[in-house]
Structures are given as C-alpha cells and as structure tokens.
Image (tube, rainbow, N blue to C red):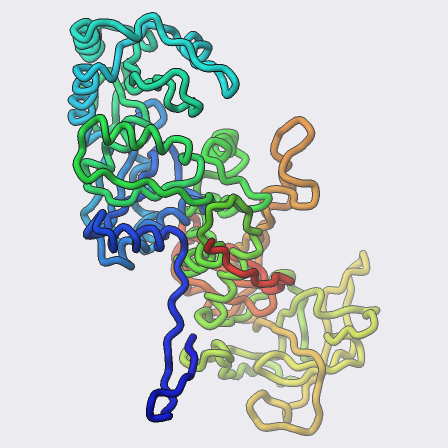
Length: 570
C-alpha cells in the first residue's frame, strides 16, 4: 500500500506505508538496533514422540520465516531428552514434514542428545557453585514440599548437603548405582518464589533406558527445562521463540543460561498457540486414536497432523497462508477449520485442472445420437487459468451423470434434468429429457434424452439459452476409481466431548465409494490434485494408489459460507 504526495516541484510521488510487523519482529528489530545481537538465529525444537500437527506448523513457519526475513540461520533440533516415548520413526517423519513446509534447515539438524556431555558438565558446575543438590525425596514428597500458589514451599532436608557429597552422589547416579526414581538432581533457587517453576526444580533424573541416539551411554537424563536453554545456548540461538505455556518457565530459562555461564544468552519470546475448533490436535489424543484403531495411522486424512494434511491433498502454500491469516499474537484464541479449508480452495482454484467424475452414476442415453459413433471434444482444463490448456474427452450415445442431476418430480427452481427440460452437457451439447427407466423398486436406472447437434459447445450457437449445466462421463471409456469422502472426525454439532469426557466421533467422518471418471483421471500420479466438477477438490492418495488404479481423497468440497477474518498481529 502507498500514499500519493507532492514533492517540492509539485510532482506526484509515491510514499511507501511502513510494513506492519508483529510483536516478535518488533522485539527483534529492537535487539538488533540496540546491539544485543548482530544477527538472528532461530530454531524449531520438536520432541520426537509423535507426528507434528497443524499447531506445530505455526511454529515451524514462524521460526524459519523469521530467520529468512532477517538473513539469519534456522535449526531443526530434536528435544530427545525422554527416550521412553521417542522413536526414530518420529524423527524421520518430522524431518519430512518440516522440509515439506518449506523450512530451510539444510544440514542444520541437531539433537538435544548431542549436548548431553555439555549438560552433565554444566550440572557439575552448578553443584560446585552451590546451585544444585542431590535429593532422595520421592516424587510425591517433592510435590508436597513445593507448596502451591498460596503456600510457600518447604526446603528439602537434603538441600544443604555438602558440595563434595553432592558431586559424589551425582557421579554415582551417572555410574548406574541407583535405581530409577531413587535420586534426582535439583537446582537450588527459591522455595518461596511465587513462580512454582523456580522452587528448586528437578534438573536430572535416573532413568535406565535405551536412547535412540546415544544408545546405553547414559542412565541419567536432563529435564526439559534444564536441557532446552543449554541447547539454545550451545547452538548460538538468539531468539528462542516458543508457545505461551512456557512464559512462566522463562525465569528458569534465564536462570539456567546465566548460572551455567553462557555468553550472549538467547532471549525467549512467547506467542499464542494455534488452536482449531472441534479438531483433535494434542499428540497424546492422536496417539490414542492411532493405537485404538479409530484412525488408520498418524497420516489418516481425517487428522490434522501435517502428514495427514499432506496425504489428504493440502499444499504447503495453503498451510502457510492459514498461519498468516490466523496471525501472531500473545492472546490465546481459536481458528475455525473453515479458514484452513478456505486457504486450500484459494490455492487450488487456479492450479487444479477441472475434470469430470461421477460419484453416484445413472446412465444417460441420447436416443438420437448415432449409434457406434464416438467424437472427441476439446474441453478447457480450467476456465479461470488458460495456461492449463485443454484436453480431448470422448463423447458418444451413452453417458453417465450424477443421480441427483435428474429428478422425476423436481422442486421449484430445479435447473437440471427432468422430463421436458433442456440442459447443457458440459463442453458438449444441449439435451432434453424425454423419458426414464426404473427397476422393480422404482429407482431410476437410465434417463433417455435427445440432443440438438447445432448446440455443440464452442460452435458459437446463440439460438437459445438453458439455465442448467451438468457434467458427465462417457460410458464406454469411463474409468472406475475408489473415492474417499471426508467429514470432520469430531461431530461439530454435538461438540468435541461427550458427557463422560470421551471424544465425540462423527460416524460419517469417512465414506468410501466408487466413481466413474474421465480417462485422464486414470493416469494420475500420487499427490496429483484435481477439481472434480461440482464435487470438490481431490488428491491421489499416496499410500493406497497403484499405477492405473488411483485412489482419490476429497481434500475439501467447493461450497463454503466462510467469511475471511482480519489477521491478528498484536
């Protein structure tokens, strides 16, 4: 946007309006201007304990986008400090997802476990400084001693152990001389702090577990709040951009990097998570759905994991637009899933070829069309984008149309086929219904029509107009494909949870049907996307499709009453 002003000679000049920036960008600008940092270095730090979902996409896009905007660096770093829940499968899936979204991490892939030796040495440093101690209180006792928001904590009886004894015990913990849960290493901060995170938090625990990256080298593992700031500091991260639930952890973050004596410590900045209405996003909920067989894996297209969205047919561009429109703010809020659907429609409307597929077919017979004759019709691939060209589509006497495109007793304003009414067959001719056949139950099995050969599409015919246009496929050459139609996994009308707290599933979240399609749709490759005329946008499934036998997932239907909101960048 710009304003027009006059220069001193009276000539119109264009003055650029300052670009609107969110609060994170403004904070970074101030840090650079004041010389706190002379560059920008960000990271995305997922735990490899599941697949990423749409909420993580916001963090990926934000952190990588900030680095790109300021000509800085971006790291992908796995916070693998809890081997009980972590798998190499999740590591590989996360790499694919982050790369697919367009984040440029190149060879900058790191693991928290890369720094386990550093963390151990920093723990020793804290002990020597009198800032950490070994405790033998149980987990229940530690919780009880911590107090609550109204009651100060009580110091552990072990808080003032001699430094040498703490060093010896911590070495013994590392040497495997203690059972899981028997000892912990705790930071010595302030048991009266109003911030519960500062009340002598645990920074190491005993855990005899095999680690996917370090094997059996360690039987003690750092806690997240201790490990995370050290990872950031080791990598030279300047701005640790994280979600709002870590705001209360920031004093502990700053304490760790300060007491561990790191130079040029990172700055933590928090933003609001991305929530979607009536959608399952939490990893533990998704994991349970997978384990209980409610869905057929982490990439089931009814989920909103990034892998599931990719499989369903969403594009990186649509997800990035969704994040942009959702905005970056400090206030928690929810975005409606219809915004995500709007973004994919907008992205595909000019990209996707528009081909014909009939999902619930009945036969259409053109009684006066020459028997045995087939002609090829040239039909544009997308009327809104001429660059997509056109294709040749076979046409003959017998076709298939959608069942709901013919009615025996049509309601008022019905514009499609009924006896005596004329419509256009898309890209072909005008036809008029003259009769229909039924089976023993009275179901329509075929519609008989006549056509007007003067009305061929593209011929320039202007003799009369029709109000309705319907799509079709040629009976002799139509291919048969499996089509999956998706609705929300959660019943939107009844809400997310049942009275007993269980998830309220939509029984119609998946419908599988057979469709008849144009020949070109039989040649499609995995991830090819199309608009099926009047039926929605579809994508070739990456798991179950075979050469010559594609399986189509409906990405989204065509209709929406969605109103585009204003982005929130406060």
